[in-house]
Image (cartoon, rainbow, N blue to C red; front, side, top):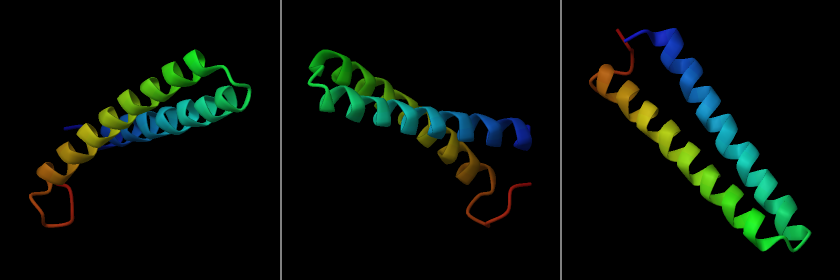
Length: 68
């Protein structure tokens, strides 16, 4: 596992999740419900991706607290 690449993927996924969630809020304020729903779904998918990467990192260090 390339630690730096994995960390970048985690940051990108988490950032995308946040950006999409903020877009969903903006669409909802404009009462653009379909666009808000689409952005919220995209946010959830990005968050799942970040969670998957985080789980890989936790598994890689085997609960020790330091990735090898």
